[in-house]
Length: 147
Image 1: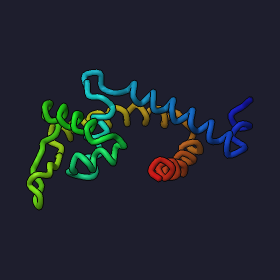
Image 2: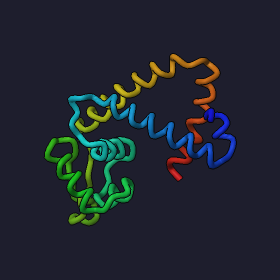
Image 3: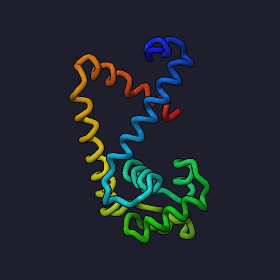
Image 4: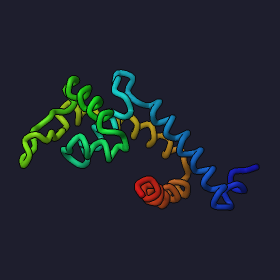
């Protein structure tokens, strides 16, 4: 059955969107820099730190929807690689804040640039009308993803 026919119902649209988003995600993952050996989870933590600024391990765990011990392992690995640094909290010196380093920021930016270039090439192959539809859909997809 053609995709347009399947997507006529909400359930059909959900199925088509799920599959398309999963395939796009796989393609974007495949476009990562082969020299970057950080896990997707570690890259997500770095990306969050770049956008939102420093955070505690607990805040990072909540944002990434993982358990604090898992986040502690990720932060330890990132710190060992020089991608993040730990700082004592201003109010409670026992609390540890995690901040991205210049190396971490450049790693995230380089990874994003590489994948953005790939996606921009794919978008350039679309018609102006198709790109206009995607411009309208992007904020809606973001809303679905963040709610």
